[in-house]
Image 1 (cartoon, rainbow, N blue to C red):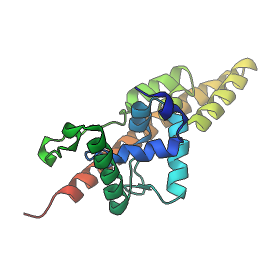
Image 2 (cartoon, rainbow, N blue to C red):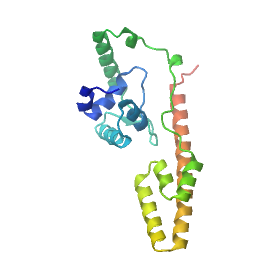
Image 3 (cartoon, rainbow, N blue to C red):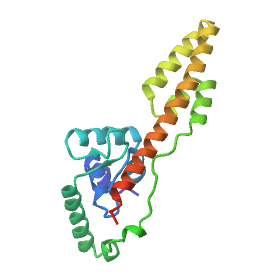
Image 4 (spheres, rainbow, N blue to C red):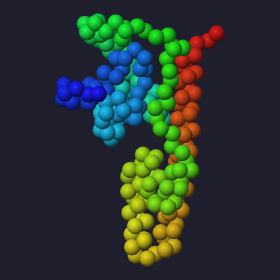
Length: 192
């Protein structure tokens, strides 16, 4: 729930404030949007600004997850503890053991079959599901133009292309997400 003062603070500051919670090590545009109750496009723009400013960095080259430097994380957590102490919130100061933390996969999985079928029947919708707004607009525009001009071979081809493209894009992004998650899990493991 957002307060009136939260509404007026810059979105970039509010995104950074998410890292003040000791259990938060990475964020995505989806998780930040849910936490701050803001549209994903606004959140992604603010995240891009923070990446350009050097405040955030992607977990890996192909990752949709972002993190702050360990020094910045420590600073934000110290601010969190200080504010919690001032407010008398002692339960917020209890650090949880890593085993007790629940790992959330906050990026919604894109089902390749769903994306493919959506674009097959209405070209561009599968691309939208995959988050490719520009590509979705282009595919829908070409398909609509071909449909309006009664060029059935072209609009059929566009529908087939859009369905296949949406399917494979969702499949590849799912594999990338899985590899990124496996990579972060292996980085977190300590040698026995």
